[in-house]
Image 1: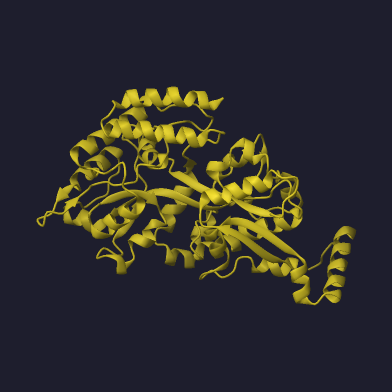
Image 2: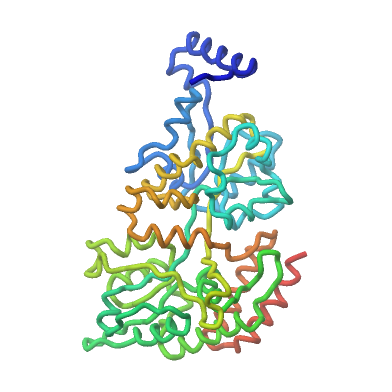
Length: 429
C-alpha cells in the first residue's frame, strides 16, 4: 500500500513528531484541552458503559484531554450555551443542542459545517436519519450533527393482551382504537386497567396518534394545520376515550414516572413513549411483567395505508461548534469521532439513542435491544413534532393547552384547534 502525503500534511506530521519529543505524553495531553458542554447523560453515554469510552480514539489521535461541563437540567445547558455563544469569545469548544432550541436565531450562533465537512468528511454521512438533518439547516448551511435521539413508539404489555384474549396486533388505526377499548377493564379485585395512558404535556404524544390519520399541528414548512379534519378527528376520539375511561381520569396531570409505575403494575396496557423506556419497563425487579413489554409502530388509518407513510415523532440532540470557539479544527475532530460508525455504536451500547440507521444492525446492540429493528425503522421515517421558529416553545404550550381543553371536554375539538390556530399564527412573525 502506498500513500501520497501533501507538503502541508507532511509539515503537520513533522510538527506533531517534534511535539511528541519535546513534550512527554502526559504534558502534551494537558497542553491541549477540548471543553464540551452538555447534559450529564451526554458525558455518560460518551465515556461510560459496555461500549467503552468513545472519546478515547479522539484523545489519543489529537493528544488532547476532554473537559466536560455538564448540567442535570436541559434548560441550564441551553442557558449557559446560548450565553457563551453570544460573547465575543468562549472557552466552550463544542456543545450539545436539543432540536427544540435549533431555531434560526440560535443556529446562526454556531459554525456552518459544510467547509469543515469538505476538508475532513464525516464517515458515511448518508447513514444519518434524514429527519434529523433538515432541522439543523439555515438556508443550505448545516450547523450541527445529530448524535442522540428519542423516537416515540406505542409500547404495550403483551401479557394484558393475552389476558383479554387478543391474539393479533392491530394493522389499522381503527383496529388500534378498538384494542384500546378492549384493554380497558376492571379486574375482579377492583383494579382499573386503562387501555391507553400517556403524559399530556408533550405535543409529540398527541401527534403519535394524529399522524395515523394524517394529522399534525404544523407542517415542516411552518403551515398551521391543527384545525384541519385529521387533527380534529384525533382529538374528538381522545375526548371520547377520556369520557369512556380508556384514558385515566387524571390524564392532564399524570407524569412519566406514574405512567412507568402503572405499566409495570399492569394498570395501563399501552402507552406512548420513546423506545428506550422498554428497558425500564422490562426490568424484572420492578414488577411481574418484566420481559413482556413490546413496541409497535402505530398503524395508519385504513384509507391512508399504503398511501401515506407513518412519521414517528422524534426529539434529538446535536453537536455544534460555537462561532466564537477558539479551537474549531479540534472541535470538528471531536464531532467526527463521536458521530463515526464506531463512535455511534460505542455510545449506543452505553445507552445512547444512535442517530445512524446502520448502528442498529450491530449484533451486540441487537442482543441488548430486542426492539432494535423496530426503532431503526421508526428513526428512518421520523419527523420532529414542530418546525423550528423563534416562538416555538410558546406555540407548543398553546397547542397543548387547547388540546387538553378538547380532550377533557371543555371545548369541542374544532373550536379548540381554531383557537390554537388563532393564538399561534401571530407567533410566526
